Image 1 (cartoon, one colour):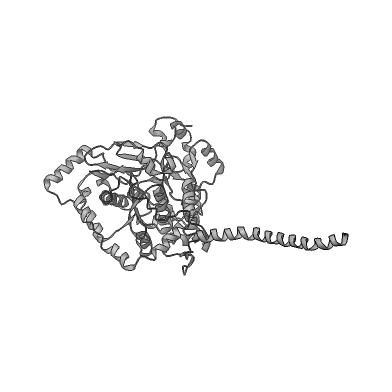
Image 2: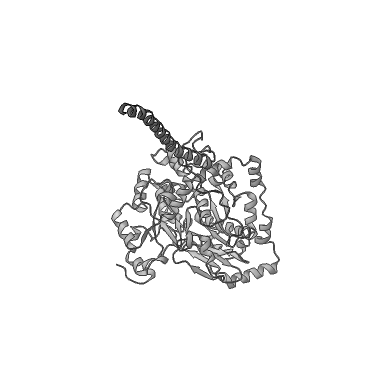
Length: 512
């Protein structure tokens, strides 16, 4: 019986081994098959990254960096990709619709007006960051690099972006503005550099008011392309929610500005490389401001390098007008204004070493102390212009490190602990997320489908007829007299220019 038992067990053992082998094979192939089908369901096809396929990957048309030749730094392909395009590794479309078309039923509708000569590496992150936080429409008055065919074609392809070119027709239209017959902006007329820009911005804001009303906007904000709105006090980090929660009788909202504090002298993309900011005086206890004033200025003329009086949003309504680049006003009443306690505008100023030379190249002023007073409104801008016009590159870099870059880590830590400085990472995270999700690459790809005829027609056939009727000065003498009377009663004084934060002497209080 023993031999019979032994001989019958051999085929049974072999069958068990075969069964186990098939079971292991099934368990191995099942998850691989599921993973393969999941990949097929999610895959939407690849896009050719225009940044990497560019004939010259070091300088994609319209994205070169001003003053880049002045630094001994050569960009790699990865530098260009990191600045604007997709990452080199595949990224799934976390943002399902890169157009960010929220729909017409969402209120309030918010628009931004900006005058810019920047390139795509700055404008694209700026636009899509504000789309994420609730801005639906952009009126971009472009010139310089921003008006070049490659850059403007990309901007034209983005839904919600209206590009206005500085054509002869536009200049003739703005020459008819009622503003030239009024007094509140008169002291800035016919002066060079910053004053000329200030007047140009104000005239652009006036036109944007008409355009915003025609587009059904509820709020309008004037912002430069080196500034980001930081709606920190709103639910879901939304400027739409922030403005929706305001009382209906509020006409204007002031966002105090925070100023960037760069910690390196080789910044390429400020929006994703700068996280430290100096708080505005309006968001600090007076004791903290005065007690840390001398430490915070670090030998510079003022608490901020540039302006400190914030930017404003205005409710779109009848008789609205600009009051300089930083405020709005009304021809028929004194607007009700509130200042936000937490939300701010983040101003990325002098964040790149090349900003010294690019600002210098935009102004033909003589580099003397007397002449720069005629060209620039703020002390630091004057000093920066003189050093950029007279010093060698090595001297400029040394000056930049001393006056702009926060190299003293101990001082930074002390002012962070005392609340003068703060770390803000949300804009950085949003823009980095947009980049990694392929949003900017998709915009560039989409722009290639915009036909040349459509692009040229958008440049050449701009129609300002509705604007002409609303901002022109072809009025009867009686109407003109009425306007001047309105200005006397509700002028609000001279236009609000860029102003430095208050100095200790303004308080007549001693400081430590």
